[in-house]
Length: 447
Image 1: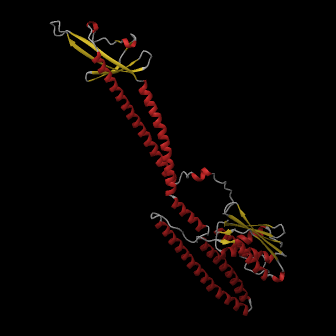
Image 2: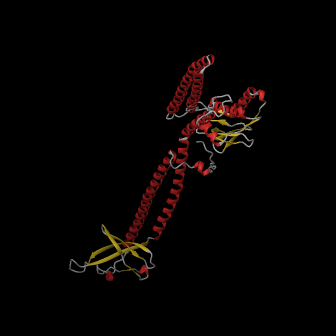
């Protein structure tokens, strides 16, 4: 059933951001994940490579300092020491000591770390040199010299930390730029699909009969197939409606002949034939109207302006009931359209207005309102005697005639209800402010 709904307007962020279950969101999420992962891995290896380069340069400078120290050293007879002494005394440290740790021997040099006199981290490089004593006859007598240089690692850590910060913020900006670029790329790349969805919505709303415009090579076959499907559907429905019309003419002619023959030969048999023929005629009209409306519902692109239809019906009904001098008013804002075929709208509105004209004393009012959402309401009320609640149910649900003195089949309200249901609408009967019947027809709309 078509119901009125209130949909709050979307914010700008909601309109720009893709839905979480959309293809665009999946593409953007996948690209964002791989972009962030790639930048994190790249930043890690770039930082590690930079640290390695800085440390190698630092070690090379330390090796040059050690070589210069060895070249500038002068032997001292009292400079020998034991090889197992791990405490190094340096006059450049003002007689403060450093304790090497994490020693690692590479070739003839030993690398390690230590804590400086002020607690700063030091990188140390030491080398032991031994020279034989020529003034003695013992071959194992020698002077041992331990050369050690140390440098503060604080600048290395500072340079690496600064480089990491630069890389981090650079990659943050780069990542944001890449994600924005992916977002724009996906938006632009999926634009033909959005145009296709818009074109389909135009067809459903009755603004177009086929998909219009040019599409990329990947989507063009889909658009072509959809156009072929729409044309085939319209053709099939058209043939079905032609068969329904032919069937109506085929059945109505024999029924008319039977009615004429029965009227020409009065009697009990003729009365029975007339009664049953009338029942058959009503059932044929009922189910043919339903079959025709059911076929029309499946056709895309149906759009019927409401105001011209109601004004035409009012004009015709004024002529039919000219001797009663009925006042039929139509109040319908322009621009409201029924999402369906004109013939079905004429069937529904015509039955309601004709029923109101049969029972009204003088005035019939027709008002159309656009409810919230794609829904319209056609309200037909009169100043006649109206219907009791149980009579409304009998007239709408079972299609019974409530008064044989009024011409008609008695199926008008039932037909209106059935066609409205096929469109997802409804028919509700109530009391009119003028004292008669108030019929409210809810249908899908295009505003």
